[in-house]
Amino acid sequence: MTKPIKEVEKIEQLLADPWAVDIEELWQQEADNPDPDKQKLFDALYTYVLDKRQEDIINEKHFVI
Image (cartoon, rainbow, N blue to C red):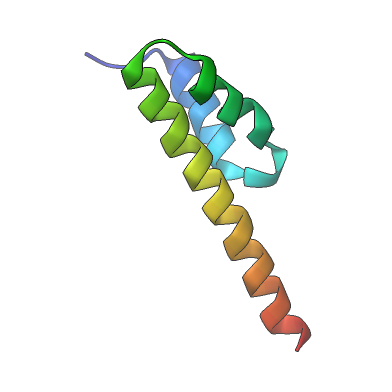
């Protein structure tokens, strides 16, 4: 089974620019979703976006020094 193209494109856009994502919304989706599988998905997306943001900040500081 393949994902509908719009869903895949939306996820790719989300992953492409972690700074354009409302990280609070991801966290809220994870916290409020009754479906355990969707909770895991939103938790993974939240963690990915947070990690990418932290990586960007760390890399940016290395160039400043």
